[in-house]
Amino acid sequence: MTLAVEKPQSQPEPRRGRWIDDWRPEDPEFWARTGAKVARRNLIVSILSEHIGFSIWSLWSVFVLFLGPAYGLDPAQKFLLTTAPTLVGAALRLPYTFAVATFGGRNWTIFSALMLLVPTVYAGIILKPGVSFTTLLVAASVAGVGGGNFASSMANINAFYPQRLKGWALGINAGGGNIGVAAVQLVGLLVLATAGAAHPRLIVLIYLPLIVIAALLAAILMDNLTHASNDKRAMRDVIKDRHAWIMSLLYIGTFGSFIGFGFAFGQVLQVQFKADFSTPVKAAYLTFLGPLLGSLIRPVGGMLADRFGGALITFWNFVAMAVGAGTVLLASRQHSLPLFVTGFVFLFLFSGIGNGSTYKMIPAIFKAKHPADEREARRLATALIGVAGAVGALGGVLVNLAFRQSFLEYKTGDGAYVVFIGFYALCFLVTWFVYLRKSPERLAGV
Image 1 (cartoon, rainbow, N blue to C red):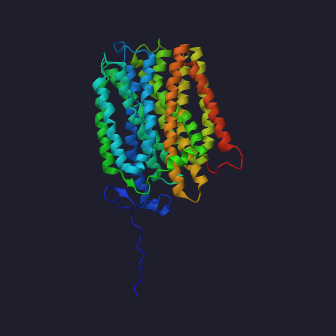
Image 2 (tube, one colour):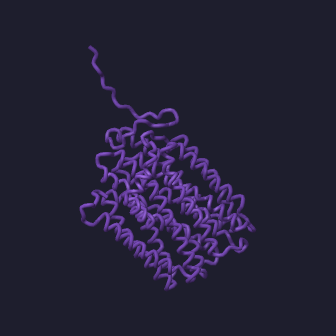
Image 3 (tube, helix red, strand yellow):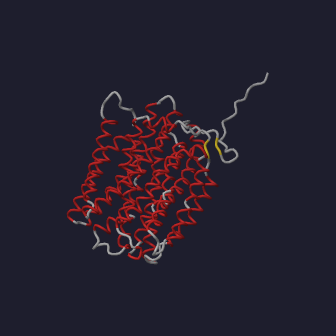
């Protein structure tokens, strides 16, 4: 008689092409033995790739500071140059989300990183006085490919981590990527302060090798997960759920504010406080501050949501953002630069916290709706990450358009600030009504 000997479960070995077939993050033993190590390795490289993607997406928030009188552009045209990549990046987030499941997280990270070479090289070729506005607008639009990297990176990391750690993992992944906005602005400040406004192409030379390094590290260190198989119906299914549109609205208020303010802040300073920022380098000293703080604090939003619940943190966060926008409006009317900068820093900080807390809400919503079906919950959460990410990024477009229209009509941003206050009030009311108000339809754990 032969006795069957139970073999111990081994570490999940990637098969050819670096695919992992056995992935069970909700299994505590599996996670402690090997899952955490593999997930952490993929997270680190994902952060780097997404970070550079954000930098390339934000390139034109820096380049507009270099476009002096020799380029013949007015403030309205410059706002369009920062609006275009935001719009393209928002549109690309939907296909980028599902590309991970179709091609694999590792494979798509390599490809999406290499795609960043296109807008970077193109900008280096055309950036010189005499270039037409149309050519500049096309170049700025192509930079939108960097905006798609966020959605694919978040969908990939969502698949690697267990529910109890998703807030932290998604927060730190997104926060590390968001810092790319501040990083490229610091690089722009360095170039302005050393080489001067006549040499924007030096920024391109700095980023070209970084893009190649990110792609190489993804090829060497990242993995694909077979369980994250694409479901062609996931997008169709999730957009039928009212929570898809509610979360997209909330994400417009958080991420849309972050990316919109990040792209526009330097121009707003130069237009509204022209006497204080007579040269681009003076504005560049401040432009990086808000995006940097908003990025660094994003993981805190995720961790607070893990502990207290995403909806509660999101509600109070929007209250704080309304106060911040009110502070900016008051500072604008009093023409107080210190109060103006303080109000904007406040907005960046809370947009960062809200980014983390809203993304924690997404997997929690579908866990509450499908408590016995982890795969279904993950399938719908991944789809909603793409939908909310795309719609939320459109908030950045709306922020830039609001500033453009306000300055055209009122010569100040006051009209835009009033709109922001009203929108944040709508967001905290919706958060309370749907996720915090006591009712039979309230979802537990959101």
